[in-house]
Length: 445
Image 1 (cartoon, rainbow, N blue to C red):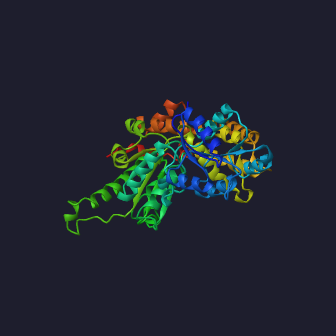
Image 2: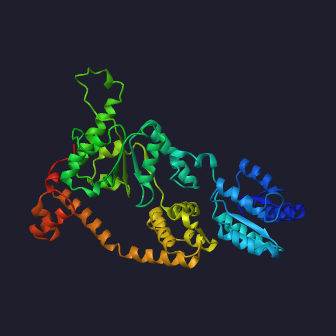
């Protein structure tokens, strides 16, 4: 049985319209009936359905014209077209243009229910008023969980709050940070994105020193500083960041404003957003991350779900990416191709989905991408994922070294003995991961 999904049925044959309505209602769907394409557009705009089932041959506006109008207003809306035997070529042409599918009259009732169920499964309910907002145009979603997350993001933007994003790689943390900029008063100011893993410990400190004219704070003045992989900051860099954030917090405290001008410290007007691929609680408990910095950052924490937890977004994202990757090809996905994408594992999340579609788009020789092409590229990417063992080993190695230096308070000789490595080799390991043993001699304050 269906779960109350909303279907719009369009046919100028009233007997057929009534019959289809009865079948779908009996299957548990919420059905809206329209006797013409013009009436269907009115119904669609008043209460958006999750799919449209329309006859091909109607009055002034036929089913294909209705489809064209729906494509403009809702590009991801699945449309199934009902055709007579003589109009099958038209239906095939429509499928190439992006119509979800077609059924030939007379149709089997069970086949009708099955095809509608396939379309509904790939088309969750949407809130068009929310999804059309300019600030979130790059965040394609129909997920209730994501909608709640976006409401929180809007609050972060409106209040210019420090925030922490936690979510797996490729899930859209950077895109969300940019959306926050677009939604608020900092829209015309700088957006500076820094990956903490790209800088050794010695450079991280200078990067986050507010008086450094070449540092990240100077570049982000008045705007947003987005710090990716915040857990990779060295202890000294964490101390620098805490100092600046604490000074900003004091500057916005009404009691602090009562101080004389000579007592006030000049602080940069920068909104800081940090991200981490995993929760920082463990790092805090182990002493690898400052607890006071964590509390400053985590006052507003957004947990970004992996794509596997929002599979209802895959059809929307797929159509969005294909339209941007090779617009001149006017590519669409066969229903089986869309199903294959929806059933995928996607360990690389939205970024991996985009990469798969980019490769498929380049290789496609037909406007309708077949299932075989999708599965072949997905399989290639899965095999590439197996080669990421070296990346996982490097991450484990770095975390091990950090914990080792913490437990020995930066004593290289002692740490090397525990690791069963000579000092020369141990120093090379530290250099490879940008770790400075001296910084571990200093206690967190």
